[in-house]
Length: 168
Image (cartoon, rainbow, N blue to C red):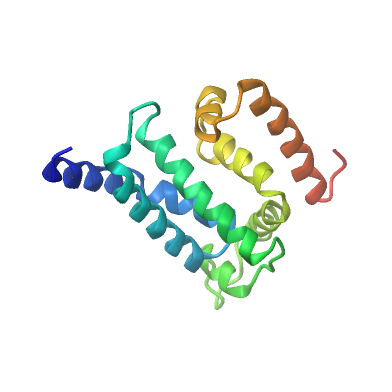
């Protein structure tokens, strides 16, 4: 791949997918600063590996795998537990000088519940509900069979309900 082609393709990837990859990293970690760092790391790794991209998947699923692996490594190092902070309320759009919006507590409860899930459950819920990927795309992104996608999604939904305090 010519250097000019690599540069223009990389610029295109950044423009097309930066926000989506950041959102993935944010929902996986729940930490805006870590999400920014992990997003940068993912794009740096993608840039270095761009010449080896074989086109066996879409650019997005390829980049998603890179970012997901960075998040998994980060979460293993950090440990699973985390607390929801006032800074996160501000990051979610709440100005402390104002009354929180009616659904702010619900949003924070969902984020906290997602953060408490096993990474494989969290990632499949993010792909299905937030990224709105089809089963086939999820299977490709996670490199798992479609049947595994369906069963893992069912278990993840059940785990989320339990984490939210509802019966599965």
